[in-house]
Amino acid sequence: MPDLEKVVHEIAEEMRAYEDRGRVASYIPELARVDPKNFGIAVIAADGTLAAGGDCDRPFSIQSISKVFTLTLALGKAGDRLWTRVGREPSGNPFNSIIQLELENGVPRNPFINAGAIAVTDVILSGHAPRSELGEILRFVREAAGDDTIYIDEHVAQSEKRTGYRNIALANFLKSFGMLENPVENVVGTYFHHCAIAMTCRQLAVAGRYLAHSGRNPGTGYNIVSAERARRINALMLTCGHYDGSGEFAFRVGLPGKSGVGGGILAVAPGQASIAVWSPGLDEAGNSKLGRIALEKLAQRMKWSIFGE
Ligand code: GLN
Image (cartoon, rainbow, N blue to C red; front, top):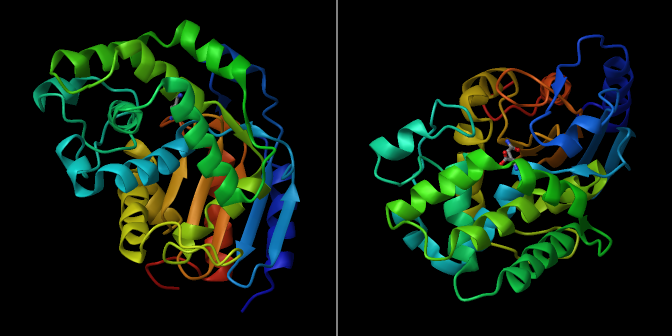
């Protein structure tokens, strides 16, 4: 097997030289302030070896990557009933699109587009006050990462709350179809806050280990979800994790991955490694530009694509 440490350092070095780094998300004002020069990478292999480089210890806003964790919680709570609320097909549309939602009667295409993630948040919120549910989400992430210092960046949450007209519209639309159990305000408030969780690449790579190892965190030995559930979450990450850029991501990287507009990507090489990359500049589909390039190089050099060498 190629030397992971060496490959990760090479990639961190190569990424430093890139001129065209994409554009930092500006529709959430607080995210627009992040320096596009940041690049971080952390990879944790099956045996626990961790290779990291660049700005791997600087916390960033995980944004939509949090949808992987809320989906895990929602499946734990509702099981297969979740699929009456949200579909499992790629949308072929931008992450914040509203068009399909009307045509498909308020059942969002998948849990990773915003409408779908808002429906998932509604499911986990039922029976809880928003504050206690947020506590549950944060506890889950901290436990998966083995790190109690992980926090919610309140500035980012408030910044999105002030400007999140489209997500509020999506939630109202869902409500109009009778597809939200809780008040719109509580659902979007919880959604904005879980998107505002801040993590470093190192923390995120560790948190994703259960997806790489059949639902089990090999660090603690705990089963977080069943092997079947982990496999299914990975399938959704592969087909829907990059919105209308999911096909391109599968074509180039060949790994299940979930991106966020903060510029992070969590990727899973099943049986091999959990990987987090971060570079705030985005491509046209709202996915990290350099993050994708770095993952393409990593998968190629480590021969980790799920589709073969
Ligand atoms: N909080 C962001 C939003 O709802 C998440 C989007 C993303 O990361 N793609 O717009």
